[in-house]
Length: 467
Ligand SMILES: *Cc1c(COP(=O)(O)O)cnc(C)c1O
Image (tube, protein in one colour):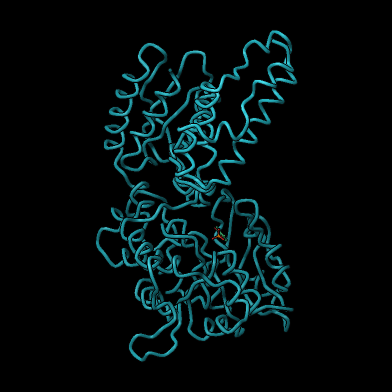
């Protein structure tokens, strides 16, 4: 068949729209969206025909029934919401590209509850007067961290920005050269500093910064001493740093506030579960830092947020800054955060917060789940590939516990004639998408980051790979 004849055989949008399968899809997805997808599908079919050689033309299918079949499959994927649930089989627990921390059962319930109707977001139910949205978490933050006060903004980057702008606009901030961090590409301390109007004064060297270095840099322009948790890297070897406690003493001597950007926000003792001891927020509070900032969705295990705890006077000043209004969090964030923080008042926080649970799941338990998944995958792929178990390592991710290799068990998968990169690509396009890692030239499913029930979707997706 020549190109013109083939092009003429392509069905019209109207013809397609009256097909039962398509009509059904229009009840599931917005009609305008489906129409656009049909048009672009037909457009790429036309292009394919125009760009084909004669021998390729024979393989192009324009028969209505088979077109409807492939078009329906295409619509079913393309018409899904853009932001959707995915399965994280990468073994990176706080994967920033995958939305960092999954929420706990109670946090999810609370978000649903609050979004389902109205809420007392800014209403004091006792007096009937206007309340503060920060009220809902302030008590919890005081209780958990021991700080005088606490509130929250959009994320930790915003918290740092707000603090710098409040205390050091047009003034100097002293930071060690070993702590001028970049997190996840877009948070660069010197840039945030510039934006806030504060002037960065670097002291010390990459590996050694002494307390005297800070002291020597203090002058009338100094407004703040800043210490930053290195988060996603460690400097090892010959190193010296001034501790937060020493800096707080120094600040007291010169009447300067001391701020600690704690990054991850560990609220429990990680050493108790065999991890290298992360400094906890409670310790930083005890040391007397005026302002402590940390993320809500890293080791804390909640939603995206920037928590700020510390001295009441300092925090009041920050709340009065008009920037706070621009950086404020919404009710869904507050609902998720309050429910997550409440776990920290319970005994079994390591069981209830998914991030902490994944970090601490017993290796034997992971191996058991890996074995189980492997045997089911074997049944699905039969002789079309190879499945086995392998010991490997998961990671915390999210700029936390950077040197820690967390032992894990993974299921490795090879499928005949399908290179691992291709497997990874096809699984990304599954519904729900499955994100894996590649190791030793094999597709790898890390059981540590799989949530319960996700195995079934993996099996379904793999079964589509081998048909
Ligand atoms: C992650 C991190 C930030 C940025 O926090 P976000 O909540 O992602 O905005 C800032 N400072 C440190 C030390 C961090 O680890």
